[in-house]
Length: 161
Image (cartoon, rainbow, N blue to C red; front, side):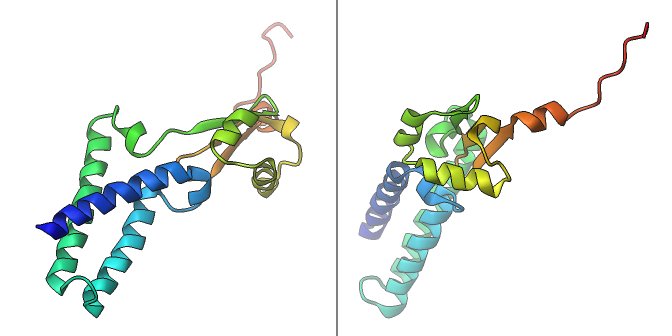
């Protein structure tokens, strides 16, 4: 039973740490992928080398992590109010061409990182950005002014013209 308590404690400890570290640092991995991959690898290693756990103990600890991950996923899909707590919400980091420096500071996203992400999307000036969102997975979505003007159906001439 001690293994279950240790696994529960470590799961929540690692979950809190990944929330504190911030989404910009996580990059491509979601919080749960990071937790699952890093800790499962370590738990399996401990079980295989028998440093701390038996094989059964390693299986039990991994099972606790897997069950908690499934429970969090189920809870966030079943109850929308849980989703922002478990996965977070996208954050606006640029509005109307102006980087929101306070928000970026809170998310630990530098102006250089934002500029590099914009360049990767073919945007060379912040003024061309209508809005940019820091997504929950660490990626940045850009909505540019020029894309909005050129998207959609072309306007039809007036009937009397």
